[in-house]
Image 1: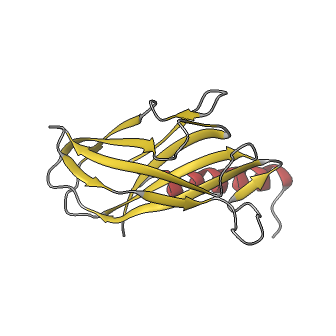
Image 2: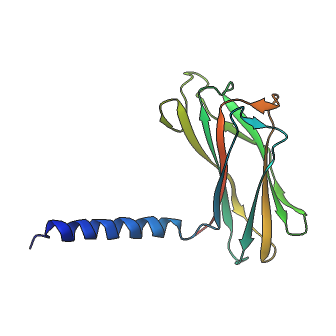
Amino acid sequence: MALRPPLLKFFLLFFSLSLLLACQGDQVFDQTSKMGEQGWSQKNQIAYSFEIKDIHKSYSLYVALRQSNDYPFNNFYFIPKVLGSDGKLIKQALAEAILYDPKSGKAKGEGLGDIYSHKFLIFKQLKFPKKGKYSLLLSHDMRTDTLAGIISVGASLVPNP
């Protein structure tokens, strides 16, 4: 028995929405900050707040970056810091993201026109000592104060299976 076109459209819409909601259900947070036209200044530290309700799980922290061809370097150094509600440092790293292949010069990540999106796994087994509010601070650690070509920076925290 074949589905009639209106019923088929309804089924496809329902299936698509279910899939979309299922993929986003487990994230603790997923936020993005747009940078100004000049780019990302070292003085502009990005801050996100989130709440941990389950301390028995470990979490993966991802950082997302959108950049244009105006970005002048092959790589990108940044510092993610996770802080507890009391301001104490939980975890920190100096992370390097490779945005262009060093040999070919070809941009990595997903691209459309001259804009590329990247997603980097920063912490794979992040554990939190207690339930409550936490903060993520992101700053870049490049030699140039203001980075041209950085369109947006974001982060997401996902519980590990």
